[in-house]
Amino acid sequence: MKRRQFIKKASLTGVGIAVGSSLSSCVENPSKENKNEMIMTANISKTPIAICTWAFVAANAKAGEQLSKGKKALNSAIAGVAIEEENIKNTTVGKGGAPDREGNVTLDACVMDSNGDCGSVICVENITNVAALAKRVMTETPHVMLTGFGAEEFAYRQGFKKDKLLTEDSKKAWEEWLKSPEYKPLINIENHDTIGMLCMDSNGNIAGACTTSGLSYKMKGRVGDSPIIGSGLFIDNEIGGAVATGMGEEVLKTVGSFLIVELMRNGMSPQKACEEAVKRITSKNERYKEFQIAYIAMNTSGDVGSYCIHKGFTYMKYQNGENKNIHSDYFVEA
Ligand code: SD4
Image (cartoon, rainbow, N blue to C red):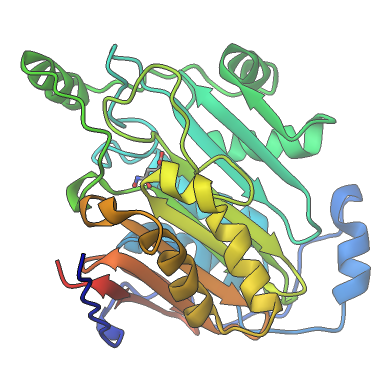
C-alpha cells in the first residue's frame, strides 16, 4: 500500500480571549503535599504556559488565568478542564457526554503532578468533575486508580455531588443512534472532544489532566487511553509532558504519552517526539486512515509540539496573556 505523507507547517489562527497578562511570581502556600516541591523549586521563576487539545478557548484561558495568579500547575489544569466537564454542549467530556450503547454516561480521567504522583478514575457515573476526583484518589488514598461504583462512592465520601450526566440532547442523539445501532469503534473528527491539558507554572513545574466520556456508544465497560497514566497523559518534571486525544485503543497499544516523554528524554523536541509517536501507530496499522489520533507535548524549556494523523486537529496555547488556537501538523491530508 502506497502511503503519501503530507506534512504541513503549523500556523496560528486568531488570538483567543484575553486573560490576565501580568505574570505573578507569587506561589501558593506550601501545604503538606507540596512542601518538598516548593523547597526544590523556590528560586525558579518561569513564564506560565497552558496547552490543551482542541479549540477549548475558555478552558485554556481559565488555566492560564490561574497560572498567572501563581497557582500550581496541577490545580490550574484541573480548573481548566472543569470548564469542559461542565459544558453540556461538549458531547465527549463530562456532563452531556455521549453514553455507552445502553444509555449510561461513564467518565474517565487522570491527573499527574510534577512530583510524579498520579490519580485516575475509570468508568464513573453520576459525577461531573472527574479530573478533580482523580486528584482526590491521588491525595486521599494510597492508590492510583479507582473504578466504577468504588470511584463513585469515594466521590460522595469526598463531598462530590450526584449529577445527572445524560442530558436531553445526548439522550435524543443516543435514541436516534439506537434506530440503526451500527457500532463502528472508529473515531472521526466530529467525535473528538476529549480535553487533555498540560500546565507549566511560575515555578517551572509541569502537571496535567485528561478527561473524557470516551467513544460515543462504546461497549458497556469500555475504557480508552484517557485515564491510563502513560497513554492518555504522562509527565516527568525533569523532561516534560504529553497528552493524547483520539482512538484510545491505538494510543494504549503504543503507550503514546510515555513514549513521547521518553523520546524527549533522548533529545527529541516536543514536535519531533509527537511525530515519532504518531508514526509508531501509522507504520503498524494500515487502518490509520479510519481513525484520528493527536498528541500535544511540552518540555521543561516551554517548547511545545503537536502532531496528528489527519488534518483538522487544533490545540490551544496560553502564554504571556495570549490564548491562541494553533493548527497542528499532520500525517495525511484527509
Ligand atoms: C478514548 N481518547 O476514550 C478517548 C477518546 C477521545 O476525543 O479522545 N475523544 O479513546
